[in-house]
Image 1 (cartoon, one colour):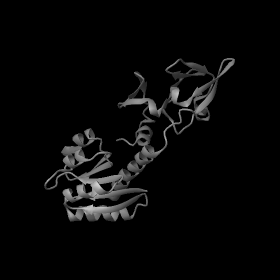
Image 2 (cartoon, rainbow, N blue to C red):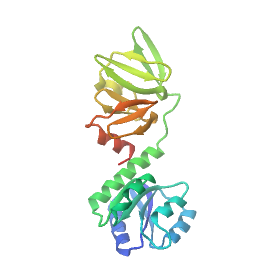
Image 3 (cartoon, helix red, strand yellow):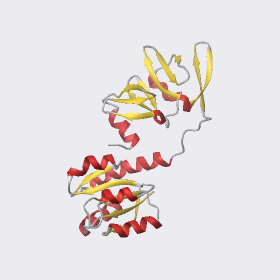
Image 4 (cartoon, one colour):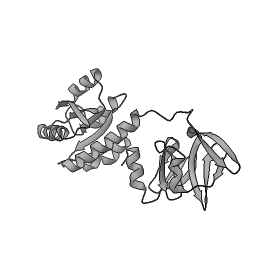
Length: 230
């Protein structure tokens, strides 16, 4: 369960967040604050996983408050103004909720936070974990952490690694019998990528080890949800 706090100088806005949080079992609201400076004092004593944060507040804005935090919890901005959306994502906010916030939209943001929280706290791939890959007459022991991505070419799949590629005869539909689904995700009908190696994501492609990998339209939402991004 994620622990969270809400910071907003509007009492009614806090009441809405408190009521919504009571309906969702994946979050535990530890405290609510109308004064951001008191929230900072609390955060200096307590750790939380998630903050619902207003932007326009007295003394210090939500943007300024966020920049004082180290390390930063997950952040969901709640505001009546859409003009701050771009800046909020530059600060790596998880989501941006415009008031009045509906419960459905609030739940979507919390689910996104829960996915990011699980990913953040899940143990990383074990560098010693390995799979056995048959390529031609030989069978190779390959560390899972060394596999960058897999690319389908006709009846074969190329296993791309930094230290050389392997060509295997395998169906893409059965690929997760070979590599662990916790560490890989399908992003295109012809590509499965190692999540830990993704360095940049754009609308239609992502980058791994300097290589551009296409993102299929039918896989775009599942990829962004898996990584907990908008």
